Length: 80
Image 1 (spheres, helix red, strand yellow):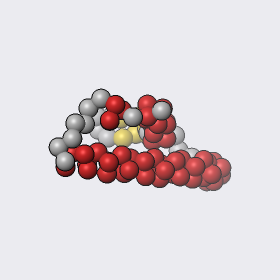
Image 2 (cartoon, rainbow, N blue to C red):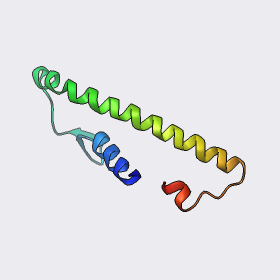
Image 3 (cartoon, rainbow, N blue to C red):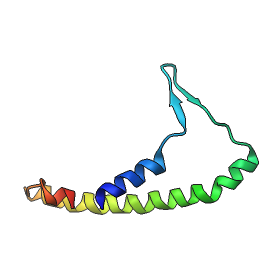
Image 4 (cartoon, helix red, strand yellow):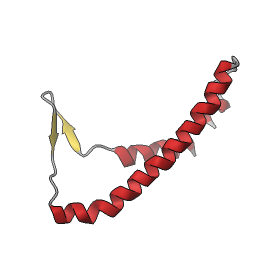
């Protein structure tokens, strides 16, 4: 399930631009109407990102506590 979450995050934050040596070049500019149409989807993405961030914080706290006690952080502990 964790690997699926990684794919979800990648799909949510996938950039909409090309990387160039000079900088960033956007390859799509939206009209106001197009942007307004996309707002509900953007809100869903942001809500997903907030939920995933909460999960990440939870995992981070759990693993930080284990590290502080000198616990082993390999194997199923970090992949579960």
